[in-house]
Image (cartoon, rainbow, N blue to C red):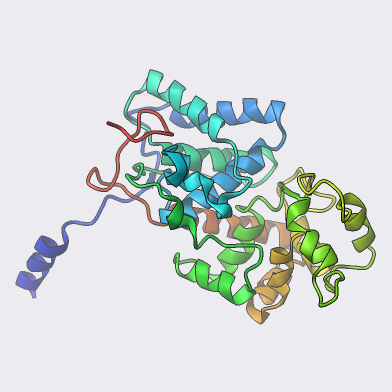
Length: 321
Protein backbone atom coordinates (compact mmCIF):
# COMPACT_ATOMS: atom_id res chain seq x y z
CA UNK A 1 0.00 0.00 0.00
CA UNK A 2 2.81 2.41 0.88
CA UNK A 3 4.53 1.74 -2.46
CA UNK A 4 1.20 2.28 -4.25
CA UNK A 5 0.79 5.70 -2.59
CA UNK A 6 4.33 6.67 -3.65
CA UNK A 7 3.61 5.59 -7.24
CA UNK A 8 0.39 7.63 -7.26
CA UNK A 9 2.28 10.74 -6.17
CA UNK A 10 4.84 10.16 -8.95
CA UNK A 11 2.13 9.70 -11.59
CA UNK A 12 -0.24 12.46 -10.56
CA UNK A 13 2.10 14.81 -8.77
CA UNK A 14 1.50 16.51 -5.45
CA UNK A 15 -1.82 18.34 -5.44
CA UNK A 16 -1.90 22.07 -5.82
CA UNK A 17 -1.80 24.28 -2.77
CA UNK A 18 -5.16 25.23 -1.32
CA UNK A 19 -6.71 28.65 -1.34
CA UNK A 20 -6.78 30.24 2.08
CA UNK A 21 -7.97 33.34 3.83
CA UNK A 22 -5.16 35.85 4.20
CA UNK A 23 -2.95 34.30 1.52
CA UNK A 24 -1.36 37.69 0.77
CA UNK A 25 -1.17 38.84 4.39
CA UNK A 26 2.66 38.77 4.50
CA UNK A 27 3.52 39.46 0.86
CA UNK A 28 1.00 42.25 0.26
CA UNK A 29 -0.80 43.09 3.52
CA UNK A 30 -2.85 45.95 2.07
CA UNK A 31 -4.07 44.01 -0.98
CA UNK A 32 -7.68 43.54 0.07
CA UNK A 33 -8.12 47.07 1.39
CA UNK A 34 -6.69 48.47 -1.87
CA UNK A 35 -9.18 46.47 -3.95
CA UNK A 36 -12.02 47.44 -1.64
CA UNK A 37 -11.12 51.10 -1.99
CA UNK A 38 -11.36 50.96 -5.76
CA UNK A 39 -14.73 49.17 -5.60
CA UNK A 40 -16.17 51.72 -3.16
CA UNK A 41 -14.85 54.72 -5.09
CA UNK A 42 -16.22 53.40 -8.39
CA UNK A 43 -19.59 52.56 -6.81
CA UNK A 44 -20.00 56.11 -5.55
CA UNK A 45 -19.90 57.32 -9.16
CA UNK A 46 -21.86 54.41 -10.63
CA UNK A 47 -24.31 52.53 -8.37
CA UNK A 48 -24.24 49.58 -10.79
CA UNK A 49 -20.60 48.79 -9.98
CA UNK A 50 -21.42 46.29 -7.18
CA UNK A 51 -23.65 44.35 -9.59
CA UNK A 52 -20.90 44.44 -12.21
CA UNK A 53 -18.40 42.99 -9.73
CA UNK A 54 -20.72 40.15 -8.74
CA UNK A 55 -21.51 39.24 -12.34
CA UNK A 56 -17.85 39.44 -13.35
CA UNK A 57 -16.85 36.87 -10.73
CA UNK A 58 -19.78 34.60 -11.58
CA UNK A 59 -19.04 34.68 -15.31
CA UNK A 60 -15.31 34.21 -14.85
CA UNK A 61 -15.69 31.16 -12.61
CA UNK A 62 -18.29 29.48 -14.81
CA UNK A 63 -16.10 29.08 -17.88
CA UNK A 64 -12.69 27.62 -16.98
CA UNK A 65 -12.81 28.27 -13.29
CA UNK A 66 -11.93 31.42 -11.36
CA UNK A 67 -8.79 32.25 -13.32
CA UNK A 68 -9.32 35.72 -14.79
CA UNK A 69 -9.77 34.39 -18.33
CA UNK A 70 -12.73 36.72 -18.93
CA UNK A 71 -10.44 39.75 -18.48
CA UNK A 72 -8.18 39.00 -21.44
CA UNK A 73 -8.27 41.07 -24.64
CA UNK A 74 -6.88 38.82 -27.39
CA UNK A 75 -8.83 39.93 -30.40
CA UNK A 76 -11.89 38.21 -31.87
CA UNK A 77 -11.31 35.03 -29.85
CA UNK A 78 -11.49 36.87 -26.51
CA UNK A 79 -13.70 35.01 -24.06
CA UNK A 80 -15.31 38.28 -22.94
CA UNK A 81 -16.93 38.59 -26.39
CA UNK A 82 -19.03 35.45 -25.91
CA UNK A 83 -22.78 35.82 -26.22
CA UNK A 84 -23.14 34.37 -22.73
CA UNK A 85 -21.12 37.26 -21.32
CA UNK A 86 -23.37 40.00 -22.69
CA UNK A 87 -23.66 42.86 -20.24
CA UNK A 88 -20.63 41.86 -18.16
CA UNK A 89 -18.82 45.07 -17.20
CA UNK A 90 -16.48 46.50 -14.59
CA UNK A 91 -13.21 45.47 -16.22
CA UNK A 92 -11.74 48.93 -15.63
CA UNK A 93 -12.23 48.62 -11.86
CA UNK A 94 -10.18 45.43 -11.83
CA UNK A 95 -7.47 46.96 -14.05
CA UNK A 96 -7.20 50.06 -11.86
CA UNK A 97 -6.89 47.99 -8.70
CA UNK A 98 -4.28 45.79 -10.39
CA UNK A 99 -2.21 48.81 -11.43
CA UNK A 100 -2.10 50.04 -7.84
CA UNK A 101 -1.23 46.58 -6.52
CA UNK A 102 1.59 46.24 -9.04
CA UNK A 103 2.97 49.54 -7.77
CA UNK A 104 2.76 48.49 -4.11
CA UNK A 105 3.65 44.79 -4.37
CA UNK A 106 4.48 43.76 -7.96
CA UNK A 107 3.92 40.20 -9.10
CA UNK A 108 2.05 39.11 -5.98
CA UNK A 109 -1.74 39.39 -6.37
CA UNK A 110 -3.43 37.71 -9.34
CA UNK A 111 -6.22 39.29 -11.33
CA UNK A 112 -8.40 36.29 -10.43
CA UNK A 113 -7.95 37.10 -6.75
CA UNK A 114 -8.79 40.75 -7.39
CA UNK A 115 -12.07 39.71 -9.05
CA UNK A 116 -12.96 37.51 -6.06
CA UNK A 117 -12.11 40.22 -3.53
CA UNK A 118 -14.04 42.84 -5.52
CA UNK A 119 -17.14 40.62 -5.56
CA UNK A 120 -16.95 40.20 -1.79
CA UNK A 121 -16.66 43.96 -1.31
CA UNK A 122 -19.56 44.54 -3.70
CA UNK A 123 -21.78 42.48 -1.41
CA UNK A 124 -20.67 44.45 1.65
CA UNK A 125 -21.23 47.76 -0.15
CA UNK A 126 -24.86 46.82 -0.81
CA UNK A 127 -25.54 45.83 2.83
CA UNK A 128 -25.03 42.13 2.29
CA UNK A 129 -23.13 39.73 4.58
CA UNK A 130 -19.52 40.53 5.42
CA UNK A 131 -17.24 37.52 5.08
CA UNK A 132 -13.63 36.52 4.48
CA UNK A 133 -12.57 35.59 0.96
CA UNK A 134 -10.09 32.86 0.12
CA UNK A 135 -7.16 33.90 -2.05
CA UNK A 136 -4.12 32.35 -3.70
CA UNK A 137 -5.40 31.90 -7.25
CA UNK A 138 -3.19 32.13 -10.31
CA UNK A 139 -4.33 33.67 -13.60
CA UNK A 140 -4.99 31.19 -16.38
CA UNK A 141 -3.06 30.84 -19.63
CA UNK A 142 -6.11 30.45 -21.91
CA UNK A 143 -8.95 32.75 -22.98
CA UNK A 144 -11.14 31.66 -25.87
CA UNK A 145 -14.67 32.62 -26.82
CA UNK A 146 -15.58 29.01 -27.66
CA UNK A 147 -15.02 27.93 -24.06
CA UNK A 148 -17.92 30.10 -22.90
CA UNK A 149 -20.53 28.22 -24.94
CA UNK A 150 -21.91 26.46 -21.86
CA UNK A 151 -22.68 29.49 -19.71
CA UNK A 152 -26.07 29.39 -17.95
CA UNK A 153 -28.58 31.10 -20.23
CA UNK A 154 -31.89 32.81 -19.45
CA UNK A 155 -33.53 30.51 -22.01
CA UNK A 156 -32.29 27.31 -20.33
CA UNK A 157 -34.78 24.96 -18.72
CA UNK A 158 -34.45 24.44 -14.98
CA UNK A 159 -33.12 20.94 -15.67
CA UNK A 160 -30.37 22.28 -17.92
CA UNK A 161 -29.50 24.97 -15.39
CA UNK A 162 -29.17 22.30 -12.71
CA UNK A 163 -26.90 20.24 -14.94
CA UNK A 164 -24.64 23.20 -15.67
CA UNK A 165 -24.29 23.85 -11.94
CA UNK A 166 -23.72 20.16 -11.15
CA UNK A 167 -20.97 20.07 -13.75
CA UNK A 168 -19.15 22.72 -11.69
CA UNK A 169 -19.60 20.77 -8.47
CA UNK A 170 -22.44 23.00 -7.31
CA UNK A 171 -25.83 21.99 -5.91
CA UNK A 172 -29.47 23.02 -6.26
CA UNK A 173 -29.05 25.33 -3.28
CA UNK A 174 -26.05 26.96 -4.94
CA UNK A 175 -28.19 27.42 -8.05
CA UNK A 176 -30.87 29.26 -6.08
CA UNK A 177 -28.60 31.61 -4.12
CA UNK A 178 -25.93 32.15 -6.78
CA UNK A 179 -28.29 32.74 -9.68
CA UNK A 180 -30.08 35.44 -7.71
CA UNK A 181 -27.00 36.80 -5.95
CA UNK A 182 -23.78 36.16 -7.83
CA UNK A 183 -25.69 36.62 -11.07
CA UNK A 184 -26.35 40.08 -9.62
CA UNK A 185 -30.10 39.60 -9.87
CA UNK A 186 -30.66 40.91 -6.35
CA UNK A 187 -28.92 44.24 -7.06
CA UNK A 188 -28.44 44.33 -10.83
CA UNK A 189 -30.36 45.48 -13.88
CA UNK A 190 -31.28 43.84 -17.15
CA UNK A 191 -32.11 45.08 -20.63
CA UNK A 192 -35.56 44.94 -22.20
CA UNK A 193 -33.97 42.75 -24.87
CA UNK A 194 -34.11 39.82 -22.44
CA UNK A 195 -37.83 40.34 -21.72
CA UNK A 196 -39.35 40.82 -25.16
CA UNK A 197 -40.16 37.19 -25.95
CA UNK A 198 -41.44 36.64 -22.42
CA UNK A 199 -43.77 39.63 -22.69
CA UNK A 200 -45.01 39.35 -26.27
CA UNK A 201 -44.16 35.98 -27.83
CA UNK A 202 -44.18 33.48 -25.01
CA UNK A 203 -47.15 31.45 -26.26
CA UNK A 204 -48.11 30.41 -29.81
CA UNK A 205 -49.73 33.31 -31.62
CA UNK A 206 -48.18 35.85 -29.24
CA UNK A 207 -48.80 36.75 -25.64
CA UNK A 208 -47.05 36.98 -22.26
CA UNK A 209 -45.72 34.34 -19.90
CA UNK A 210 -48.76 33.35 -17.81
CA UNK A 211 -46.56 32.99 -14.70
CA UNK A 212 -46.12 36.80 -14.55
CA UNK A 213 -48.38 38.27 -11.88
CA UNK A 214 -51.26 40.17 -13.60
CA UNK A 215 -50.57 43.15 -11.34
CA UNK A 216 -46.95 43.23 -12.51
CA UNK A 217 -47.45 42.60 -16.23
CA UNK A 218 -48.68 46.14 -17.14
CA UNK A 219 -45.64 47.68 -15.45
CA UNK A 220 -43.25 45.47 -17.40
CA UNK A 221 -45.05 46.19 -20.67
CA UNK A 222 -44.98 49.92 -20.03
CA UNK A 223 -41.26 49.78 -19.27
CA UNK A 224 -40.49 47.57 -22.28
CA UNK A 225 -43.10 48.31 -24.99
CA UNK A 226 -43.05 46.29 -28.24
CA UNK A 227 -41.42 49.06 -30.26
CA UNK A 228 -39.39 50.49 -27.40
CA UNK A 229 -35.66 50.65 -26.73
CA UNK A 230 -34.52 47.06 -26.20
CA UNK A 231 -31.37 48.36 -24.48
CA UNK A 232 -33.33 50.21 -21.78
CA UNK A 233 -32.43 48.75 -18.38
CA UNK A 234 -34.64 48.01 -15.40
CA UNK A 235 -33.96 46.50 -11.95
CA UNK A 236 -34.10 42.72 -11.85
CA UNK A 237 -35.14 42.78 -8.19
CA UNK A 238 -38.43 44.67 -8.22
CA UNK A 239 -38.64 47.30 -5.43
CA UNK A 240 -35.34 46.15 -3.84
CA UNK A 241 -32.78 46.62 -6.58
CA UNK A 242 -30.18 48.58 -4.62
CA UNK A 243 -29.80 46.32 -1.58
CA UNK A 244 -28.43 42.80 -1.27
CA UNK A 245 -31.32 40.88 0.29
CA UNK A 246 -33.72 38.02 -0.31
CA UNK A 247 -36.42 40.29 -1.72
CA UNK A 248 -35.96 38.82 -5.18
CA UNK A 249 -36.86 35.39 -3.82
CA UNK A 250 -40.17 36.73 -2.56
CA UNK A 251 -40.72 38.39 -5.93
CA UNK A 252 -40.18 35.05 -7.67
CA UNK A 253 -42.70 33.35 -5.38
CA UNK A 254 -45.25 36.10 -6.04
CA UNK A 255 -44.91 36.14 -9.83
CA UNK A 256 -42.86 39.34 -9.83
CA UNK A 257 -39.76 37.76 -11.37
CA UNK A 258 -38.42 40.02 -14.11
CA UNK A 259 -36.35 37.31 -15.80
CA UNK A 260 -37.73 34.02 -17.00
CA UNK A 261 -34.65 32.18 -15.70
CA UNK A 262 -35.54 33.29 -12.16
CA UNK A 263 -39.17 32.21 -12.47
CA UNK A 264 -37.97 28.75 -13.53
CA UNK A 265 -36.82 28.10 -9.97
CA UNK A 266 -40.50 27.36 -9.29
CA UNK A 267 -40.61 24.72 -12.04
CA UNK A 268 -38.55 22.19 -10.10
CA UNK A 269 -39.68 20.71 -6.74
CA UNK A 270 -36.17 20.83 -5.25
CA UNK A 271 -35.34 24.43 -6.16
CA UNK A 272 -38.85 25.54 -5.18
CA UNK A 273 -38.49 23.90 -1.78
CA UNK A 274 -35.14 25.62 -1.24
CA UNK A 275 -36.59 28.97 -2.27
CA UNK A 276 -39.57 28.54 0.06
CA UNK A 277 -37.27 27.64 2.95
CA UNK A 278 -35.99 31.22 3.16
CA UNK A 279 -39.31 32.54 4.37
CA UNK A 280 -39.94 32.29 8.08
CA UNK A 281 -38.52 33.66 11.30
CA UNK A 282 -34.88 33.25 10.19
CA UNK A 283 -35.30 33.85 6.49
CA UNK A 284 -32.76 36.63 5.95
CA UNK A 285 -30.01 35.21 8.18
CA UNK A 286 -30.42 31.76 6.62
CA UNK A 287 -30.25 33.17 3.10
CA UNK A 288 -27.13 35.18 3.90
CA UNK A 289 -25.39 32.22 5.54
CA UNK A 290 -26.14 30.00 2.56
CA UNK A 291 -24.99 32.72 0.19
CA UNK A 292 -21.60 32.95 1.93
CA UNK A 293 -21.20 29.16 1.79
CA UNK A 294 -22.06 29.08 -1.92
CA UNK A 295 -19.86 32.08 -2.64
CA UNK A 296 -16.84 30.31 -1.15
CA UNK A 297 -17.64 27.15 -3.13
CA UNK A 298 -18.00 29.17 -6.31
CA UNK A 299 -14.65 30.83 -5.71
CA UNK A 300 -12.95 27.43 -5.63
CA UNK A 301 -14.22 26.22 -9.00
CA UNK A 302 -11.38 25.31 -11.35
CA UNK A 303 -8.78 27.43 -9.57
CA UNK A 304 -5.13 27.33 -10.59
CA UNK A 305 -2.68 27.64 -7.71
CA UNK A 306 0.55 26.27 -9.21
CA UNK A 307 2.97 28.07 -11.52
CA UNK A 308 2.57 25.23 -14.03
CA UNK A 309 -1.12 26.00 -14.51
CA UNK A 310 -1.17 29.76 -14.07
CA UNK A 311 0.70 33.01 -13.56
CA UNK A 312 0.43 36.38 -11.87
CA UNK A 313 -0.31 38.75 -14.73
CA UNK A 314 1.29 42.17 -14.77
CA UNK A 315 -1.86 43.62 -16.33
CA UNK A 316 -5.17 41.86 -16.28
CA UNK A 317 -6.14 42.07 -19.95
CA UNK A 318 -2.91 40.59 -21.33
CA UNK A 319 -0.99 37.39 -20.77
CA UNK A 320 2.59 37.83 -19.58
CA UNK A 321 5.29 37.59 -22.28
